[in-house]
Length: 129
Image (cartoon, rainbow, N blue to C red; front, side, top):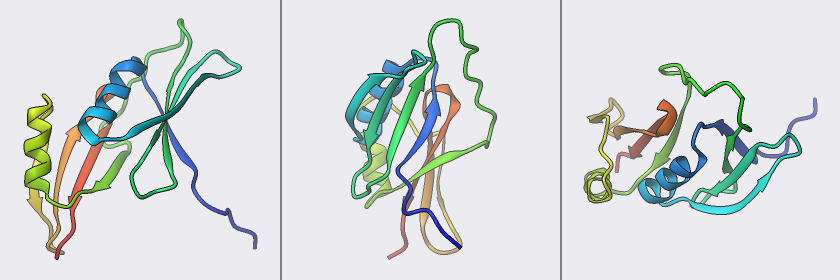
């Protein structure tokens, strides 16, 4: 059986692409790699994730499209951090706050969440040492 080669990107629809880009850059330190308009008129922004080939694609549909309404617990992104307490303190300095946690898991890792624009959840994980 054939299989795919690798995961390239994950698309997330947003209502306000600039607000979302600001969040991912300022709260998580992701970097915009490219922007363009799709043939259908959607605004697209690709964000690089550290130490990964996978990117996050943000998509804002053209005016007149229905607004994005993210269902609770529909999906989330998870990122590893070295020191969750220090990361959370830095988030606060930049005007962001954890929405849940920190919580120690059964494996000894510590997790917390921050809410991105549109209601997407972002999980932060400090792996057990």
